[in-house]
Amino acid sequence: MRAWQYPRTSPGGGLESHLTLNHAAPLPPNAQHLGPTDILVKVAAAALNPADYKVPELPIIGRLVVGVPASPGMDFVGEVVAAGSRLKKDGGQGKGDEQEEEMLEGQMVFGRLDGPSKFGTLGEYIVVSRKGCVRVPDGVMANDAACIATAALTAYQSLAPYVRPGARVFVNGGSGGTGVFAVQIAKVLGCTVVVTCSGANEELCRALGADETVDYTKGGVVRVLEGMRRFDHVVDNVGAPKELYWECHRFMTEKAQFVQVGGEVSWGALGEMVQRFLWPGFLGGGKRPFRFLGLKTEAGELKILVEWVKEGKLKVVIDEVFEWDNDGPIKAFQKLKTGRARGKIVVEGPK
Image (cartoon, rainbow, N blue to C red; front, side, top):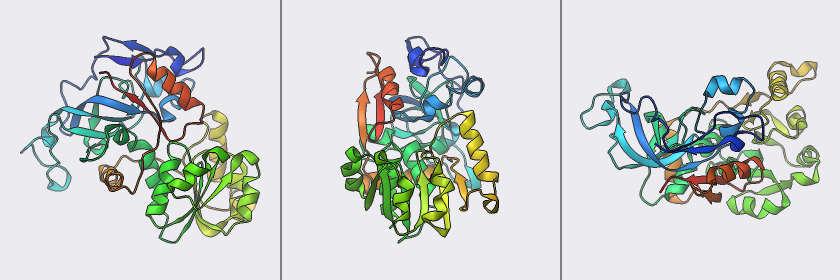
């Protein structure tokens, strides 16, 4: 198959500096012998996420976790080529003796791999588990479907378990790939939403439903939040400014929780995370419960989200679509790494 691959991520600029198109890449090792609930998919488009480069670029750990040569990418939309025995008509029972949903050859599906791997979605074919693969409903555009899985699921899981209608929610980073979904999902759940964004993205965030915006480029975000009515929940998609968590008791209600989603991937950031978990508030640590979101791939939640897209409750915001050829994936990662994308970045599959 054809696949964009990198043999290493350093030296010289990171993963995108080493991406090349391999016209004779091997198929995923289980493509010929699918597990009972596995699906072989021909990728039509892939949406990029920061984890697609942050994990592989971790010194030593990245190589151990992912391996090389590798194709980056977790999110996809594509066409079913083959399905495991439990996903075929009369193909057996799933958990709890329930019949697994049938997956038909030629059906359009979307979803995500569980994490960065050697056989990511910038390869022509992928093998995905049933829990990470859902049918694309009629009326949902393919590129839109490609953008849902990681970003929208992250936003959903950072909000839905914690908030109730009428809650006040603060989203740090409202215009990025996850933020644009978080704003809208919070509104669907009946919340009042305040977000940070640049002045240039204020109109976008308000169009998505934000009730108020804070221009982070002017500094003093904590001070501005202190002047507002207290928040019942905080989602941090950025990881900055660092004092946001340490000072969050100044703008959060007593029972509110602080959920970290995004941030820098480094040893220093890991140390900061450990401090947040272990340093007790009475000794000067954080004074609100801290949660780091460990994303769980759930087909049922993916179905909810894609139905919201179909119904118009969620709008997929795509910053730019890159083509498969002419170094499109390289340019896509370069754009992603600027941290200035408004919404999602998509790479369409080979024609």
